[in-house]
Length: 117
Image (cartoon, rainbow, N blue to C red):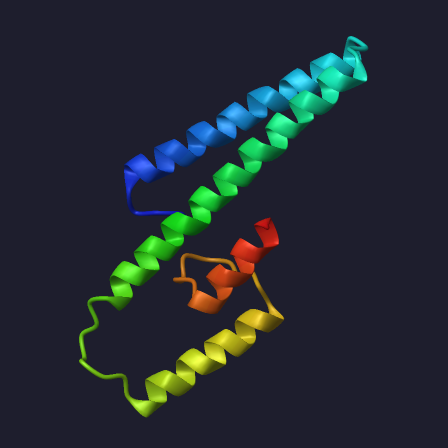
């Protein structure tokens, strides 16, 4: 799940739908032999729309991650928790994506963000 916030999900889906519409425009322009400049301009708009959607997804996940970190149940992390977080960060470097609804680590979020950059 991208977010527990239905408004955030709606905004992201709207961005992706807009990108899909722009991509349909690129395909149509190519099929109708539109000038290269028009095709490239529309393709640039698609790329930008997808980038914005990706950044919105990552920033939403980061905000949720930070808000969870701001309200820890313990005042200090135990040594075992620190070691576990370190192991999670190491495994995130080896495998930047995982499946399921597990929360992303900060290292995984950073990797996803850099993939978009």
